[in-house]
Length: 158
Image (cartoon, rainbow, N blue to C red; front, side, top):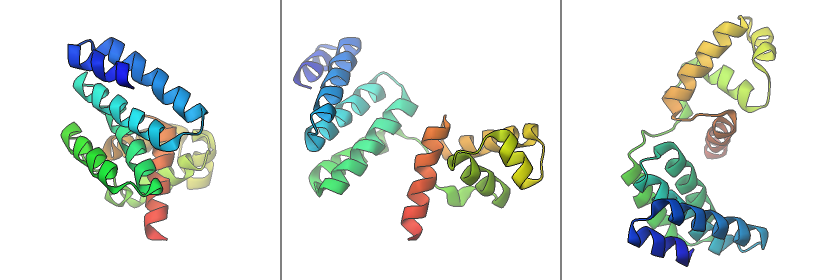
């Protein structure tokens, strides 16, 4: 992580990202959750500086969740501040229409578009369109991200 910070300070964001990637992977593999979360925070900041908002948002949200789980409020606050700097719109499934929410939930549960179409009585092409609108509203770009957002919503209602 230190090498990544030094490279970022020099303005070498490619090397900074590579070093922070190595740091995060190695620390996570060793089970060093707190240090891995700090490396993920650094990765998020570097992605933000590279104007890679989606990647920055993902790393910063995951770092924030880990800091909160570990009971590290100062680091959680830092992650929140960095998220605010990314400027992504809030990701809340409550902003979806009922159809978008149902289709997104089914996709997050692992159903294929064809399966969702059969369950929701619509064509697979309609499912694609509904999912595209849901992705845009939630600011996500993959089913994995969609799954995390939908899981956060379920967790907040529990």
